[in-house]
Length: 384
Image (cartoon, rainbow, N blue to C red; front, top):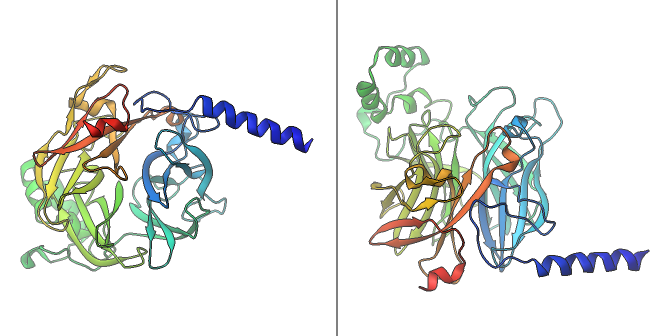
């Protein structure tokens, strides 16, 4: 019996090796080593000790999949084409009232390796069960192994009681919820944008902490880590410095593109400049991607426009709506120069388990990041 099981396992591995992928096919279902469509949405990728690790939202069938019923799924790969199912890295819990109780919302998990403590730190957007998107928290979990199981630590709204750097002293005055609502009710759109620039939402949330929704994390060349998240009712991105153990915020942060309504941030660095891809705020529906560049991650971000070029033949959607997708992560390809994979999700809110992935090649050209549609491609693209 033992021999039979072993033989079956070897045979399964042999069959998988025969069907091994050697290219990327954006939008097409992507099977893991078991032949099952990858279940890691809103994902991020970490490279560690010669392997890539993919972390994303595990979805279930139907509209119930818009909430977390399982947790964060992990896969590993040595070549980026073929992925091994490593199981659930962070599990939701059954305990009523727990932050990550089954039925909460866990989105955009990202994992980074902390050399100081030799451990792995996961950050994610968390909404508490039954509260819609009102909690707007960031969640933290930690593991000694890249595949987990991760231990949930806590969730919170970051930077409570801290003003961002470069925020004018004359605007550093908290306001009440009552005054905020009155100003919002009385303002037309143009005046509201002026108030956003002056930090009206930031000032409302000053004492309790800033909102944190769509997010990513980024580790710079010097090992300093940053948490980038949509804040201020999704109107403004915050870029926050993390502590040396990557498990807390230092309180030093900046506002990027105030009033720009950017979400789904994805960040990379090339030749000393930082590049950011984001989407507009249109719920699950795709919109036009936008990109930005900065010479200092905590400095001013210059708008570059839509980074996408081409058309997705599977749905006949072009760059004007990001091929039908939304950004989630920019992955530097190990061992290659000016080689990035721009990762997008094609959301299907009526059945999120069938949501698709678009992993597309990205390069920096003339100080802009460019993402070109490719129906099928491989890493030799970066050798051209």
